[in-house]
Length: 469
Image (cartoon, rainbow, N blue to C red; front, side):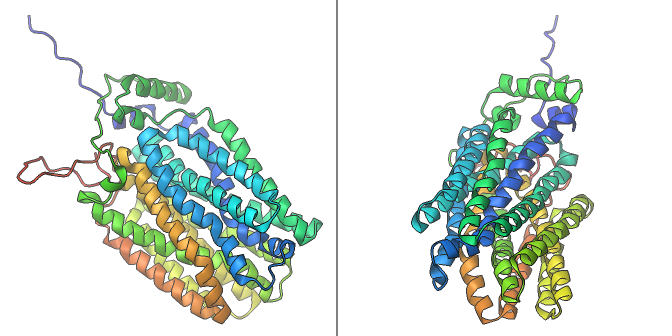
């Protein structure tokens, strides 16, 4: 009698399709969203507390010191994105997922207690170093838990929590600077902004390791246990054979994203991330100061900031629709070109109403672009190099954000039109880079293992483009 053939192994993509979208994914979205909003507060907070820091440490005539304070967190994020992204691909998502948010909160609290300006700059750098890890890992982890057809919407829903963080920090700054003198108010803003991170650490402990990471690490039993947990929480049956285990041959993920089929997407993504970040942080880091220069009181400045954050929400919602309707590349490019057009409209605005309307349009377009970019990037990389790829892309954004305060300060000191013209040019450059990425990841399952480089004379079955399986 012939021996029956063993059951065909089940791919991780098929298993995730079986568990579907349910309570687990929505809970994970809320958990990640809370800390995403907390990260937004930490990233944007420097511009809000700058008047208080200036008053506390007598920096009124020290533009270089003000710029150093604004750039310290971004410098930390640049190094953190490179470091933590690689660590998460080597040692797992969950460890980095927990540790970075805890360090973010602790260094945020330390910033509020800084006894001198030098200590404040150091603590903001260390806070940025931690935040640099949460940004790429949060997105990679969520992407790896969501089935293919729902992935784009979920990733943009996560990005929409950035608007909530922006609103929260603006309201918090408005309240603190209304109740305390500036030299004291900034400490309250920094201290209270760290609290959501502590809460986020506590609730993140229930999140398991990514089953995709477990599979490529050869831990099939643990991956199956996670999938069974998700199925129970979603109330879905799970009937799978042995999970197919594809061992990764990537020993240096940072090198892997710069070779083979990933070289072109990595280069063009670097341009898109740098271009969008330079303009976004160039505008929003100095916008509160620019509003003050137009004669607005602090309360009016923070009110305007809340309005700009609210304008981001429809930008995200439209992006969530477009990424699945016309694709990731075209959505990203259209939003970047729209950001360039909105920059010129903002430049020509004269009345206070026109300034608020055009800056809201710019906010709408910029955050829609961020949403599309955060969807597109993790989908282009395989699981064995996904957080490294996200970390590299995020590092390019942080590199731009390091220069953004200096560039913005110099250009806005000359004229707002000069600054906005430069930013618009970079938005166009980023849009062109997006269109030159020839891979479209809409409705494609994630890939788990990066193809090793082909040796001279070696014959190999053609491999699917990045983002396919």
